[in-house]
Image (cartoon, rainbow, N blue to C red; front, side, top):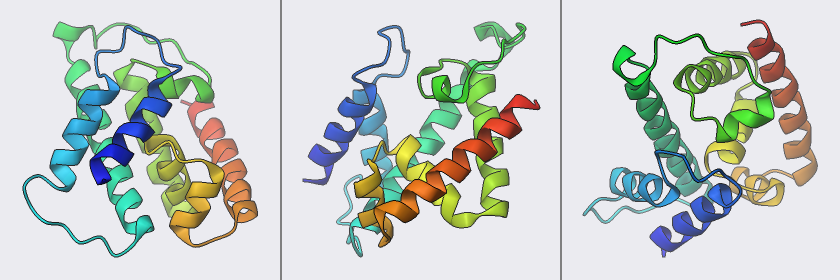
Length: 160
């Protein structure tokens, strides 16, 4: 049941992505699932616990993937062009992914709740309503946190 839900989330998240990604949604789900569950019988406290863990697993996988691609043998020594914050979700660019992670870490120091919203929305691909349910808060609070977080991240990434 957990695996199927992760697959649906990843498929929905990757549906609009370009075909040239080297990390496909299925591979991301498989790796996240193995990290989350493997062959253990994991007891999740609630939906929020599961999605927080899934988002964290996916985040770590994407960062590891980005770091691996950053080496000179994989073109990591080339000049990178800045892109819009909204395009980061589909970027196959290690520097931009790592810059986003650094910006999210800075956001977490400023506003922990906003960082949680970003991780659930960005990495787990949850809707506003699902994010609210996972965090035990209202959709309007999630929208407010999401708006603040996007502006914060955009400002940080613009200045890099």
